[in-house]
Length: 240
Image 1 (cartoon, rainbow, N blue to C red):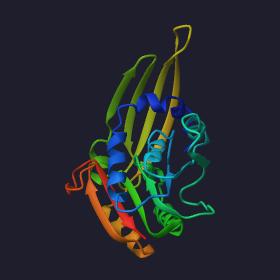
Image 2 (image 1 turned 180 degrees about the horizontal axis):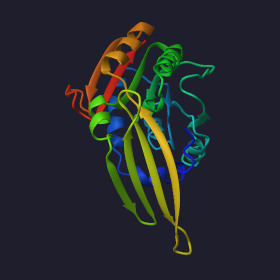
Image 3 (image 1 turned 90 degrees about the horizontal axis):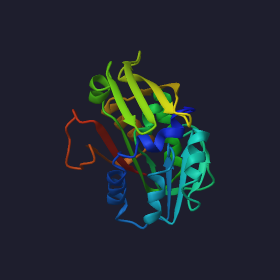
């Protein structure tokens, strides 16, 4: 995913995202042990990743988009930023925790890539290390992302976001149209298309179990007590 246009506006468009709630979830499930190292896959521009410095001695953020990583590098010199593919990476160390947050896993369209990601994560975790990730629910994919149009109007920037159901089950095409105000007051149009897919909860569960993950916990919408499948966001916590 190149994010050739979105990377430049990502932080402005996501400044209302509940990053503190993601941070709270991560801290909640890592609080029982001292965390010396954490790897954040699909880190984007690193807004959430750099917050992990508050509880981990070493933080590494990885993203497939070089453009995203460039913006992340400007936020913190204390995080190690890498360009890499979560479905195919090889680092020279293991970690106490690995995260894949903000529905980053949903950008993998093939089930084989999801399984490969879990395999690589497992190989890079210390004994009893923890994986935490979240995905869009199938309910959200099939309702909120099914032919809907959204508008985000900011100062000097307007985004028209159109969604269209994809060919694969529980998938969506995001057609993004940006209107950016230039210094002369004129607006320039930029277009970008992205694809996301989610899987049934049982498929993620089976994949994790087949690899060897244990103590698999699930919940919805940042609430460990919520088990309503008609929620928007599904969380998994699993240990090696």
